[in-house]
Amino acid sequence: VDTVDWHKKLWDGTTRVLVDVFGVDAVVRGDREGGASSEMRAYFSTLIQRAAQYNAQNKGGSVTLLLLSKIPPMQESDDAVFQESDFEGANQKVKARIQLLLKKNIPLTVENLRKIDIPIPSASEGQRRLALQHVDDLISMSDGQIWFDEKLETAGQLPPMDPQRSVTRVGIGADTESRADAQALRRIVEGMRLILSQAADMGGAEITKASEKQIRRQKAYLLAMHQPSGTGGRTLSESCAALLAASGGYLDNAVDDGALAGTEKGSSTIDGLLEHLRSSIPDQMREVDESLDMTNATKGI
Image 1: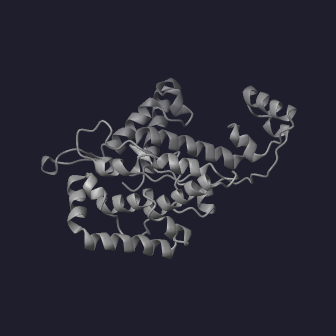
Image 2 (image 1 turned 120 degrees about the vertical axis):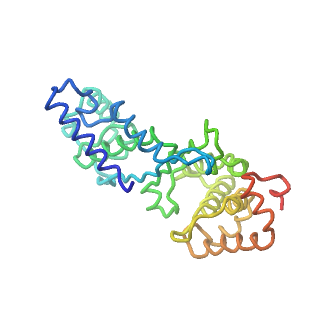
């Protein structure tokens, strides 16, 4: 399935037919207003979560689609300032919050409005908010999501993954083995998400030895996770080895020397590490791939 757009058009078309034939009361309010009704969510959940079935020879189970959704970029500059008159069409709750901001002499900038979730009064922002709503609907149907943020990309972070919005539910409640839920990975990445989130929130904070260490560890994790396009996926053991090197501080010197995610120096550092491990401890790497777990003895090598 290359796109779910045609399925959405099918749903919208059948909705219009139901309205034409049976009247507006034949469909729920969510469908009439372009939102996601419970019926629509059930329709797409079936399409996404049970896209295919493995046969008994392949140990059974189902296949979940990997979805890619793009959100329109923010058009307004964070420095843009709006007037009270720009919110004439807003509801009373938004108008009351605007009045509160003005009384406190807080400028109605894009940045300030977004902090307290007040809609930006522009057509492009309306389209963006609708797209975000659709993304939220897809998230509720999926087994998790990886969220790439345009601000992180602009800041030079590769991959521009937002750890606070990215989450996986693969393997939770499942009765079949799941590579994404492998014990080997769970033993290594415990606490990684917290480290990445805390480092991401340090913009403008006072630089201390502790904050420098946390930011360095963030860069090491990003370096370990980065895989140049077209190189193919890593094995479980290779992913574990790269993340273990980052969590143990073994990539710190390389990071300080400019070996960052997305750079040629960073890629050669990880490639060299993995090549060394494949040639020096092939049996242990194979054991991790086959058992999906990592013993303390293997971890300490």
